[in-house]
Length: 114
Length: 113
Image 1 (cartoon, helix red, strand yellow):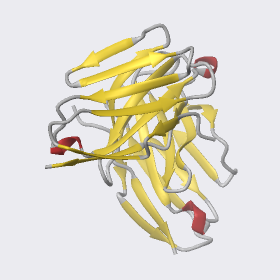
Image 2 (cartoon, rainbow over the protein chains, first blue to last red):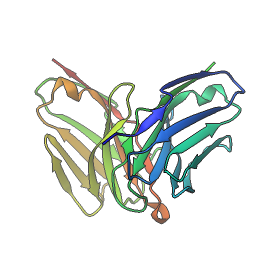
Image 3 (cartoon, rainbow over the protein chains, first blue to last red):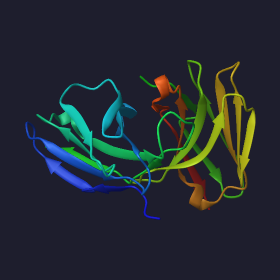
Image 4 (cartoon, helix red, strand yellow):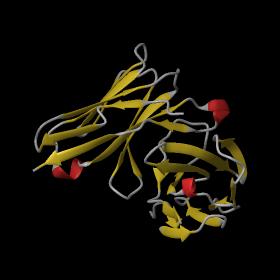
């Protein structure tokens, strides 16, 4: 069974640009969550999607948004990029929300802002 | 804000020794999970322990949970070079049925051959 796939693996952007990151969950998994990982702040929850609906959102500005498609694939978008957005963005999937279960993570997209 | 705090922040031991990492958290939880992250990779789930459990084993891993002290520990026995990684605890308060993991800052474990 293929794991969580995130594309691209690496991305370099400049301030003010926008970026879209993609995540394909494990087949059959319907819940997708996004996390930002930085050396200073560690791992922080961005948002969670299930059945194309955002169920939970972390404490990030509105420049961070996401969506989920009917096939459970998810994208997150960051607009008006700032230097502080440089981070490893991790996507995780699970069968469904609301139950006690582990999250399966992809290897992330490393975003660098110049 | 971080829910969990791992202790120590970094740990270096010899291969074959046991490694113990601790995690403290602040609020009540539904479950606590431990994850491993190799450099530049995603997180790999190790163990999930529910709030009504006190101890759990998986191979060379042993996790304990003390909800009265709001703390957990991860023990790796007979360490191997391949265990070199960062280890994170994550708590899940399960707000309204939605999953949201809150991670600690992690412990960087180095196993010296």
